[in-house]
Length: 82
Image 1 (tube, rainbow, N blue to C red):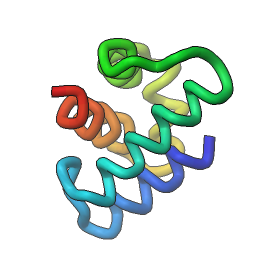
Image 2 (tube, rainbow, N blue to C red):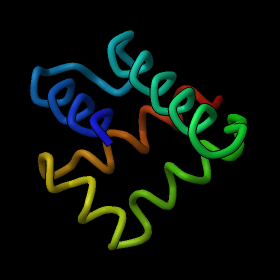
Image 3 (cartoon, one colour):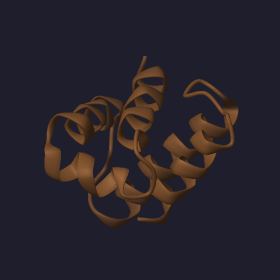
């Protein structure tokens, strides 16, 4: 998904997970999931964020953009979901 590339760029450009830029990407991710797979409620999104760092397959795939991207995405989702 190109949104993970955008998350990596956001992180590499010095934005924090709570920045407007990162939060807009969380909404983009949530909308993408809803439009292409299933209705992605905040609770589901929060669970996905946790899975992105807990499951090595997801983590490695997301981190191929830049190391640490999975953790950045998870933190941004956590902030959004509260």
